[in-house]
Image 1 (cartoon, rainbow, N blue to C red):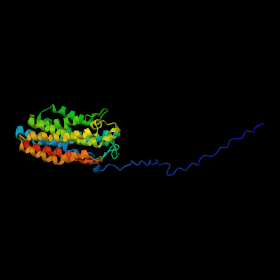
Image 2 (tube, rainbow, N blue to C red):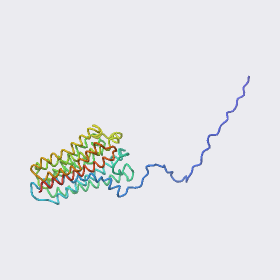
Image 3 (cartoon, rainbow, N blue to C red):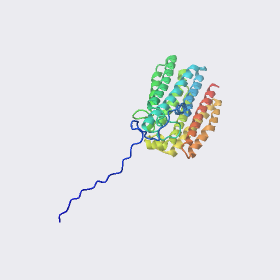
Image 4 (cartoon, rainbow, N blue to C red):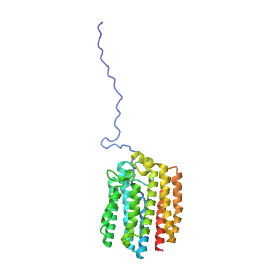
Length: 326
């Protein structure tokens, strides 16, 4: 039987909707992450003022230890040491904001504002601000070097700036490999305290070493509280801090040791400098911080623990300084 070929009928597809809006204008993506430019308050928040006491503590202790040797207060040199320390602290905070932000590490963070990750500021702008503070620290350090004629301090200053940058900057930042606490202890404890003592007294008494260890341990405790707060986000982002490597419970124990060990040092110093007993008043901030670290339910509670530990640090430094000069 002869078949007749039938033509396939074409069924029209769904009718194309006309494009809405002005075709000459770029269409908005509707990105929910679109935000307003950073305000002054955002920039101040990104400086992480809660961490600034860590820059003040070694200057207090180092100056007090220097006065044990020379019985004289070189306030100009001490002031420039403070400028160096605070500028480096703020500079490293902005540098971390930039480096973590462009890596995506800070996309979901609890705590102070992140300018780069939130897109409230251009990464280049944040980087420039960080470099400005590093430059301020360098100029103040140069002034100290010229005043003291200790030219080898230029190398120390350069190492400090390099260490500040590579905490989260560069291809292999050491902060991503569990070395943050070690470097913080060295620079916020030993280098800052002993350096302050040396440029004023050209000597390093035992008291400066004991105080430097105490300051360094408290700085490490602040970093542990910060990293404990961010442990989940850091794991996802591949940032292997010491807290990520050892877990929550060991971090809590380590925090407790770092927060209390400086008071054991102070009690030893109090046998020779009785005013040092007053450092125990700083436990009024340290003990609540420890309690929060052990009992917190939400990561944002650790922001309070971090602030209390910073307050502990500066109170500790102030009382030790008083003990040495009193």
